[in-house]
Length: 58
Ligand SMILES: [Zn+2]
Image (cartoon, rainbow, N blue to C red; front, top):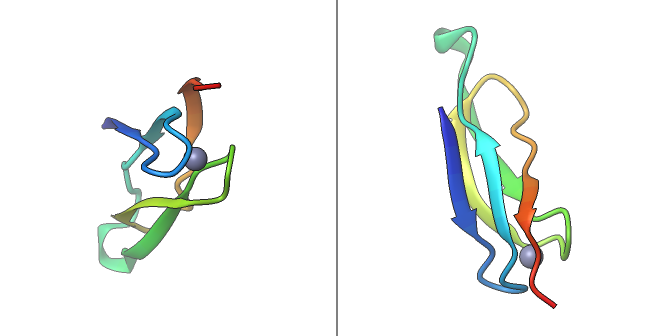
């Protein structure tokens, strides 16, 4: 499922997919803002969530 979250540091609107393949292997992974490197959230998944910029501020 696609999640959208604004970065609290630089204001960019980010989206990431919080899907997982192997539910038994899930762990908390940090979602990093690709613009400023801020941690914008955590996802409980076995994959590495990659945030994409939907709309950047400034
Ligand atoms: Zn940011």
